Length: 224
Image (tube, rainbow, N blue to C red; front, side, top):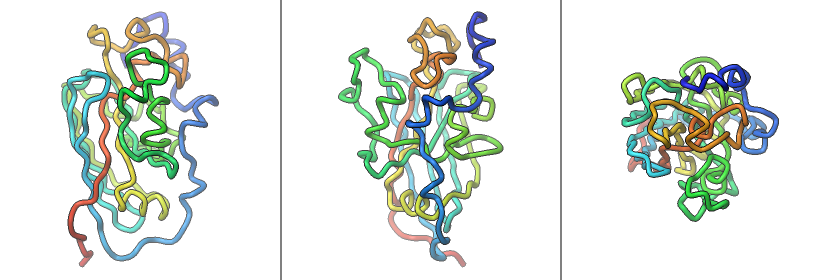
């Protein structure tokens, strides 16, 4: 991760969410239950840019019982920098991407917390390896790094039955984070100050850059 030298040491503590983040991410408390029926449902999202970014992308999640087959392609992201990506869902959320109306402090950018009323808390951390629970929301050493400014992500993930049902009904949102506001090729504190999620992280590393609601595709694929 590209950080200014003065903050590299402090950033070493950011691998997991801090106490102040707990209210912004989901838990596994509603993930228990029995497996869904013998069908697959495919959902798809067109990922639209936030915060005046030039990025774009798509996400597809195929749900088979409690198993998610997640595929994401995104381009025009900050090169060689980790981009946290999550599936969000909240029963009280609007289940959509945030707009400028969600900029509650009127600083002309949307941070992750400001988007919570729209897309809900983190339910799945789309890491490249290891844990995929909300505990890994800020596990930046395990997210795609866009070596050429692009991400191609594929992973099978198992979740709770209630969350799987919510995703299969089109109630979940995919969000990708990380934006270089001052266009200097790195995440730093000069672009937008410190993150509201962890003061040891630049806001550039955690602000959302792409967002899209997972919509159910027509038809259901039956497992043979």
